[in-house]
Length: 274
Image 1 (cartoon, helix red, strand yellow):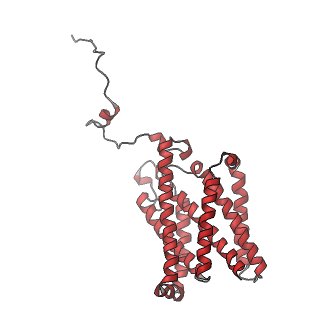
Image 2 (tube, one colour):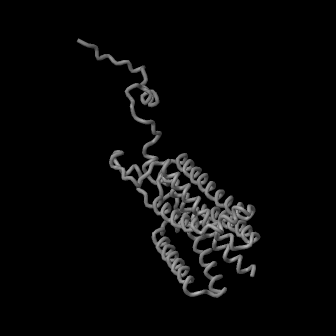
Image 3 (cartoon, helix red, strand yellow):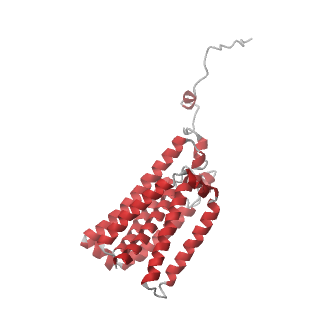
């Protein structure tokens, strides 16, 4: 015969004691819900941590691109090496496209139940950072090649103007009055994507049908407006489109917006200088 007497004064074990017990074999995750949903649905500390990671990665990408540009203008050996090695241009172009598509379309690891189900093209976080580094290096090379066809003073002015525009758009994206961008994000991206394809098509036709200065300037303004809107919409919707473990994809998206905005501003300033 055994006693069923219960001591109500003894508190139950804490959650921390439970996970530290010898019977607990799994990893410690503070809140599993926070890491399986969109960032916007998570708690404030998780959102803040995600934004911090995105900004750190984006700062690294932009700093690397800026370092390439300044190095090419200040160091004649690096300048001549970039100009005289056309194979690096082709290699960078192909590699940047492959890595960009790879990172954009790579499924999440959480979509697979076991490691055996993970295909070869789906990388863990370390592999994704390697791909992002390769993408940033090759994209920086391509952007630097473009800037070498302009005067150094124009490039510096374009960098300053782009920085001001990015800061202004970042502040503007925080206003609640722009909530309509969130409510109609599908239609906005539909028109933005169509505008992007039109811009790409016009750019390809310029290789076969030379443009005069007026059309080239209009093309620059079209790109500046398009990528400014892209950046504004992406900043508004970035927390709603990605999960907490997709900071790499998010930073790459913002990086491309800023780089394309910079190239459009550079085109406009070159015509104003003339």
